[in-house]
Image (cartoon, one colour):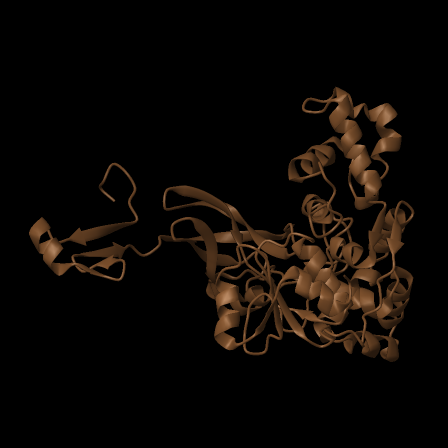
Length: 405
C-alpha cells in the first residue's frame, strides 16, 4: 500500500542466473520463480436495485446496482449476480448490505450478504419471465442455469448478431453482405429484421445507398443482385438462418427432411406449444433431435413476435422443399469422409449429396468409416484410412458408386 503505484502481487526469483539455468523448468513453469497473488480487496456497500442485461445470445444476466464504493482503487457501482440461482444462493435482496470484491482485481462480484444489516424494507428479487428489451418470453431450459430471451428475430439486444448469422455462409450466404455492412445498415435503421434485407432494393429510391461512403453504383447493384439470388433457398438453410437455439446445420437438415416444408414444421410446433402431446412426441422422436431441441423449436414458434418476423420474411422468399433421403442407394446407411481438394464439387455440395443418398458424413476417420473420398492434397485422414483398412475412393470412383456419372 505504500508504493506509489498499484500492484496485485509479487514474483519471487532465485537471484543467480547460473542457479536458474541449473534449476530449469517444469513444463512451462520455472523451478526458480514463484508468483504470490494478493487476496482481492473487499468492501461493503448497499444493493439499490437489480437490473437485467440481455446479451447477444439472449442470455438474461442480473446486475446489482450498488451504492458507489471504492475497491482496489476503482469506484464500483455495478456487480454481476450471474443468474437467478446465484441470487438465491447468496440470498441477496434489494436493500441488502453486501460484501464485494474485484475478482482478479478486475471484475466486481458480490461475495455475500451481511444479514445482520438487512433492513425490514429489503425486498426479495423476482427474476423476470419476459425479456426487458423486447417483451418476448424468457425461458430456462431443463438443466440450465441461464434464462434466455426467445425473441431472437426481434430482440434489439440480439438483433445485430442474429442478422450476421442470418447472412452467414451456411445460412443465406449473401455475397457482399457481411458483418460490417449489417452493422452499418442496422445503425442506419434500414435493416432491423431479416425481411428488411429483401426490401432494400425497393426502398433504395429513398435510401440512396450508392451515396453512402464505401458504396458505389456498381457495388450496390452487385449487392442487390446477390440478395435477389437468395430469394429462392432450401428449407434447411432457412431453419439454420433463423438462429433458433440448438438448431445448427445438422438439426436444421434433420427437421427439414422430416417435415418437408416450413408450413408443416410450423403447424407441428404450434400444436405442440398448445399442449398437443402427439405433435411434440413426433418432433422429439425425429432421429437426433430429442426433448431439448424440440422444446427450443416449440418456444421459438410460441413467440408471436417471431411469427410476425418470419411471416414478413416468407412473403419475400420462396422456400425449396427438402429432397427425400434415398433409402435404397448404394451408400445408404454408410459413413463417408471427404478429404483433400475436391475438384468437381465443393465440400458442402459433396456433404449434401451424400446426405441425400442416405449416407452419414463424418469429419474424422475411424474403424466405423465405410468410405473415404480423397482429392488431391489429402493428408492425415488418408493415412488414417489406410491404417484402418477403409476403402478409399477418388471423386470419379464416388460418382460411379452412387450412379451419378
